[in-house]
Length: 198
Image (tube, rainbow, N blue to C red; front, side, top):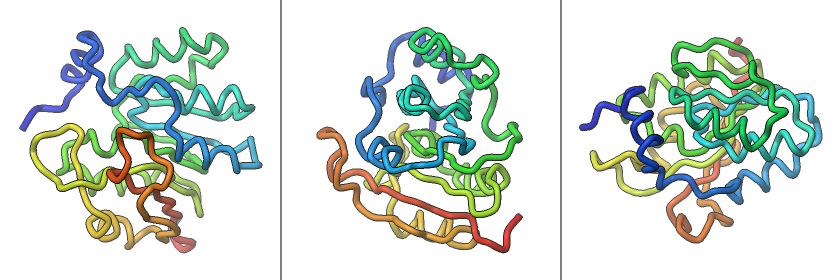
């Protein structure tokens, strides 16, 4: 299996091998954002890539949006597209080394880009980063897990088992509004941190 470290991701951006980059916000996440009413929520987008989600949030009045990526180029790309996006909201760091406190984590192609052996660590790290009753919302791939990634697949059953101990599974179902290339391959989810966890 490939070593999915900082050098790997830097090289992917430098060589423009970014097949996951659709060039705009994904439809299911846009639909979710469009129904949010509290624009003061603190939002983290990990492994955000070029982060069209952060751009959309920022331009729609969400000013507590933070983006973290191990690669520097996508952070620079976001800053060039959105010059007034605060530099201190662009975090060049490893997600697993980062600390903070957020109401919402948006998941868009980060989880599926991690080595599958880091999935439990991801579930635990999101738990640390979320405030009580905080949520992870986004998309997970729904196709058989193999060693051919990234992206790596998975199943509704696997995701349910991974998160159910510490999260209330509000929604975990096939996305009905995926982009054409991903139709039938994505699950939309809303996981809420359980009340009794701090």
